[in-house]
Amino acid sequence: MYLSVHGNDINDTFPFWLKSLPLHMLELGANNFHGLITSGHAAFPFPYLGILMIGQNHFHGQLPPEYLQLSNLTYIDLSGNKFDGFLPIPPVTAEVYTAVGNKFAGEIPSSFCNITTLFLIDMSNNSLTGEIPQCLINVNTNLAMLALAKNRLRGPIPEILDRKNCSLNTIILSQNHLQGKLPRSWASCKQLEVLDLFDNELEDSFPSWLETLPNLYILVLRANKLHGPITSPKFIHPFPVLHIFDISNNNFIGTFPSQYIANFNKMMGGDKGQGLLQHGTEVWSEFQSTTVIYKGVQMQLSRIREALVVIDLSDNHFQGEIPKVMGNLQSLTGLNLSHNNFRGLIPTSLGNLTHLEWLDLSSNNFAGEIPATLTNLTSLAIFNVSTNQLTGQIPRGKQFDTFSGDSFEGNPNLCGPPLPKPCTESHQEEVPSASQDEDDAERWVEWRAVLMGYGCGTVIGLSIGYIFIQIRRPPAWLIKMVVKKQTRTENKPRKSILGTHGRNHRAL
Image 1 (cartoon, helix red, strand yellow):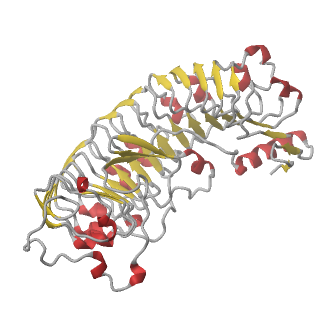
Image 2 (cartoon, rainbow, N blue to C red; image 1 turned 135 degrees about the horizontal axis):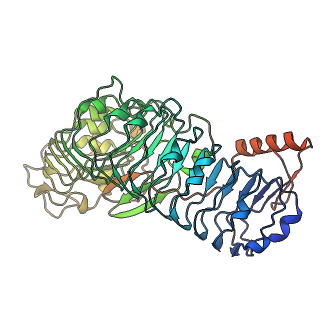
Image 3 (cartoon, rainbow, N blue to C red; image 1 turned 60 degrees about the vertical axis):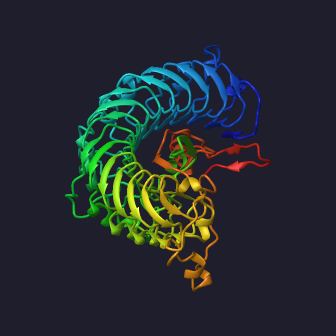
């Protein structure tokens, strides 16, 4: 028997009276349940309960440990409440454990290492301290997702000891105080698709050894203390499926190797979004999210768009010219090279990036004119070339008619709208508008303002960000698994699901 009252704006305390029902699933998520869950009602007579979902409510205080010591419990969602105290320990049968967005404190108990069935752990957005237990990712060879973002964790990142049996698919440790070097042993995690270490205190050189990972889809190293030059790739096809590459706000120097750009094959078009969900685990689409820093404001996107393709090299000390091969990455939706020492001309080949939604080249040493080919970027919502050495008349037409003067300020020799400085006759020679260049009216695509809307802006970073789970329903594959196990034990036919949407639902 299953009971789901998800998302019904129910205002009540915890329904202790449900103890009389032989439930397999109790889903109370996204309501206004509130108050303490006391140990006085801890005799939980739910011998068949496999799924407990009480997330996105207003429960507070400490959760009595008895509530999680149910022999068949596999799925636990405590997220988005105000629980405090130490982390409650799940039973040895647990497979999914989410406690994100509470006030849990203290160290991560080493007893989590005894639960070898766990394949998804999310303790993000709490006040956890201490180090990440070495055993957490080594005792459990089933662990696929580990999310500990936005806590107060310190110390080194654990190495993978059993390099032949690494099952990790997603690692999100952002917004902590982790120190030391990046573990070289992670190169053995061939299933790894998402690695987010944003905003820590890691000191190391560029982890070129990650380029061999065949499924790495998202790499975010932003806001650490990484340093030194980035040398040419050693692997013939580095980062073969990479879609998001963010190494901004570090201390990298020298030129960025064009060989990497030339081999970002999945950014060149074709199959978008084929890496992130390739294992068919529906749970990933429910748990992953992005954070965009826009003009210093952190903005959360609830899910990673499969079509989001981004390179962010901003806030480093890169120099040299933009490789012309950058224009081959026709799937790019975001390119941020701001706050570096890039120089030379802006390549006309950037006009080939027809999916580009934001382009930030500000605070560099670019010279020459703004290429008129950039007016071909009909999806461009954010554009910034301020604080460079650009000259000549600003191109007009299409998206360029929507950008304000902030996009171009700090270039003394630029002229024409939207700047107040008028152009002389010499400035106006051979500066075509987009409407004059287009011979085929069908090439005009009505643009949309993506992320922040109209005008210019400075996108200075993108990361996977901390996880704040908003699960509408438990994934179907997990319910099937729980039901299969329980019916095998009970040897009874499956019962009805009690819903609140005007009908009974059949078990999946």
